[in-house]
Image 1 (cartoon, rainbow, N blue to C red):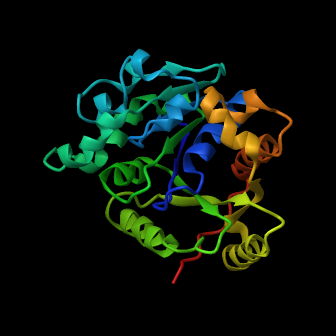
Image 2 (spheres, helix red, strand yellow):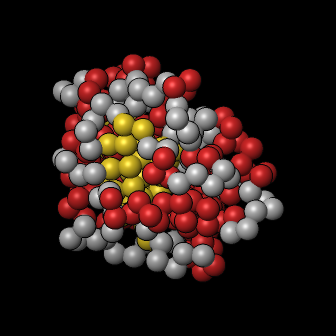
Length: 264
């Protein structure tokens, strides 16, 4: 069975989609079969991998509310081992439309279950909120990866996300684990960035990935070309960091980190 990793943080602009795209590409470059599911109505995970909205043959909305098998919604990418189930702004209405549906919290899990054995990793890119779309993602996942921006308000909201994860464990998905915290947008010249890194590592210990994603112009450019950083500039610092993250996640298969420490 493939592992399902949900990439979540209710704060916007912390690098969720950048991480989803480039971690997926890094794992695929190691010849791991990867599926990236876009649960964010902005649809940037698909466009960031070169998919054109007017050429899509179905989206995750069709699986959640249209009853279409997820296997009919797979889109290929430039990377042989990476496929995507994209999203469009139509998904915005799903938050409301799901309210009166049966098994509304389990729609994504049920849709992904038939595909689980076909992939080594299934990554889910969540919206910047804690609504029904994110709840579906957390219930479907084996673990949660949290991108955390290296800035002053980095830990703001993390306690709320941690509380939500605890509630999901208690009510829906007792096996949900913490995959790890990924420090993003790191600027070594900024004192506050170095302080955030030190504080997060001191508190969360092994829960924090060794890999740190720097502020990198090439990382911010590649979405406009519809390419992951691996295909846009393989020599960039951003590419090196996501390749390192992919290796770290694969290594953690054999040596998982200890249970997550709670945020007060």
